Amino acid sequence: MAKYKVEISGINTNDLKVLSQKEMQELFKKMHSGDPFARDQLVEGNLKLVLSILKKFTNKSDNMDDLFQIGCVGLLKAIDNFDLSHEVKFSTYAVPMILGEVRRYIRDNNSIRVSRSLKDLAYKALRLKEELMHNTNQNISIEKIAKELNVAPYEIVIALESLKEPVSMFEPIYNDGGDTIYLYDQIEDKKTNSDEFSTRLAIESAIDDLDKREQFILDERFVIGKTQMEIAEELNISQAQVSRLEKGAIKQLKKVLK
Figure 1 (cartoon, rainbow, N blue to C red):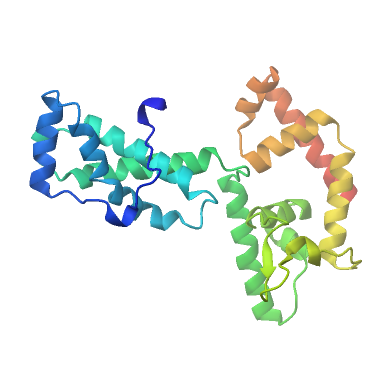
Figure 2 (figure 1 turned 180 degrees about the vertical axis):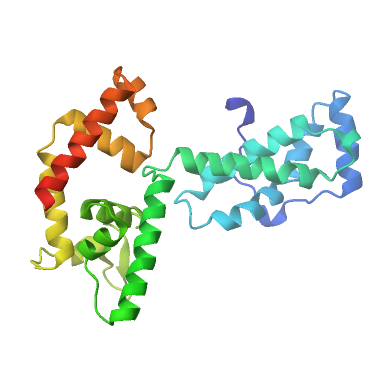
């Protein structure tokens, strides 16, 4: 990683040079001929390319400095592997490599990973809720949606929760020039009798009653999205055992939630 690290401390990015196609070709020729400074010039002349790509990720990361460093990793890899004989513009070759590095970093450093099957269930639940509300003009409960989709209510709750972006308790929500009000200032313990809240409590209680291995399997399967075979290898047991434990845990939860 150190090989690809780029320091830009003290550089005004507005003044960064953009190389012409002819300048780029000349620098690549010099680099391949052993010029020790050509590579650095190619990096500096393409930093604006990295910045332009990062614009689409401004809402994906709290630390754009880190993303810039990762984008530069992709840029350096592109420079080191670019072949002039292919007769394509460098930017055409470099953009996918820079994007790949940034997306991989965001994926690998995301603290919450949601499986595609869980997201699909959430979208199905939302579509169904909208259709039922349109037809009946009434609010639709989690239990009704679960019954229509032939799944347990806790699966619907978990799926819908997976679509929510995590929010910091220290997120500022108001500032009139004086003291800033943060999200945690507005959090209150309010009692409610809503179906969703009751269901959530029942789910938490039912999951707590499962043994640790069953909890682990459900979490890995339905939150992380791993296969039974992957979990079996992790626990050093057979896939059949994982399947049996998973079915038993789900059966126990259904029994509690009936």
